[in-house]
Length: 288
Length: 295
Ligand SMILES: Nc1ncnc2c1ncn2[C@@H]1O[C@H](COP(=O)(O)OP(=O)(O)OP(=O)(O)O)[C@@H](O)[C@H]1O
Ligand SMILES: [Mg+2]
Image (tube, rainbow over all chains, first blue to last red; front, top):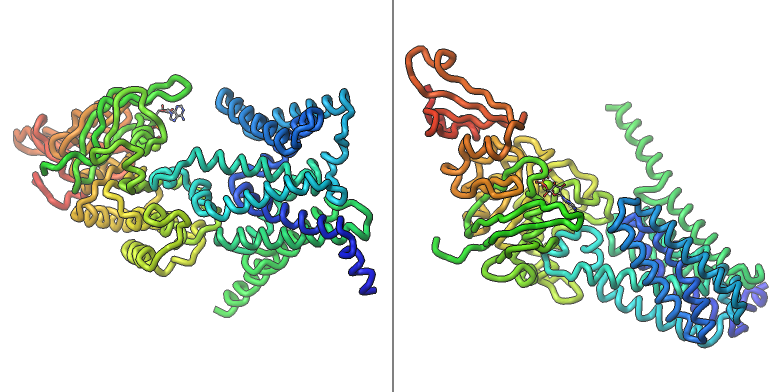
């Protein structure tokens, strides 16, 4: 039994899948803490789909896929900002409009030029078969992102919480926003490899949402969110060994389980705690 | 005072990207140790003026200098504190009261924003000063309207800016909290701060302001309270939007006394003038406490 449980660790590709997933999970979770507070959660989804044409083109021109993905992500973000400024369309409409356009373009490129890139890899992810050069790209992206986030997390918090105040203390608000969306695009690209375009949204939404139920302080929220995500991603990659390859699905399912646990049992904002409080109040009211 | 003005607004015109010119050609100077009311109807450009002072919007023409510096420099040196309108704040954000107040200290910290003992002391002081110490561990959404206001005042205190901008600080606040806020502003004035306060609440303006700036897209009047906050200027600022109640002649006197009482109200605290037509005095900004011209 123990032998069976340890079996994944005897394969290099499994070990690699586990730590790469954990790294990506950590970076995405950090970003998710900010995203979900602004109601921008769908931005993650949008970016993940929008980078597809960039990846396809990059493979076609044999450039590093991260470069292509990144360029497409930035282009999409700029496109959304531009349309937002010029029209009165709502945010969700603009996001939907832009990301489906990019995604369709990506599919078109791939179908016309069946290159080395496997569409399925982009859409569903395939961490178990990740190539060495891709690992290098993912590691660079996530380590740089985490480093910058650790340096700037408080500044970003102020910008997200109260832009007026951020300005009044002399923070470069626009610069910090650009930094955030750049990191978001970069980490989305990294997450493509792990869980695929369809499920990236879970990586940049769920851990933050879970942590939000567990604490009222932003600093702790970030720590919880990152910890939960690192554990679920590593565990998910590990479990997927036994289930034969559905890594993205397993990881996201675990994320959801963590959320459900918090939803039920969180000390202050959980369902059970709320019930308990109501009962206590009712009892106290009955006596007094 | 002879010092250079803390806020110098010079022929400022702000045009939004949609082509709407919200304010044009506004000029006024304000010095340290002043509470200045910024008064105007909805859409007259009060918030726009604040945004210009904070560098949110760039004036199409004219310029703003804060303590002799341009806006960017002034913000970098922590000169300006901003108390936002309640509607602008995300009350569900996971921060505690003390976290928000600590944000006021960020400009004084190093790049990593790690608070020093001094920063903590300033936060404690600020919280004590607004009477919010016992709520310091509350999430900000779990407070009453007046308490919420006080948290952001405490943040401005902790920031120690010499200029404090307050956007509608009295909306959703009861009389007691309003009095507490006014009291605090007076203390700050005596410590040499300059406060610019936008408000609709005409009745309380003479209570706490030394100066007023009246705007309606253009500058209507600016200057000391007693000479600027007159019935004529207010009529220009508010047009037909205020209730005007005038008591004179037989309704007020049983002799030929030409003095009259004018009550101006926007349905909040009324503003009351008393006296002969051109030299009426404000008597009831503060509940007629000073009782000038009483009969
Ligand atoms: N972002 C914007 N883009 C375009 N026009 C704007 C924008 N913000 C404000 N305006 C316009 O500028 C004018 C002044 O608005 P502002 O918010 O400064 O008014 P205000 O005096 O603060 O009003 P209130 O008392 O309602 O707060 C209004 O006519 C408003 O429609
Ligand atoms: Mg306003």
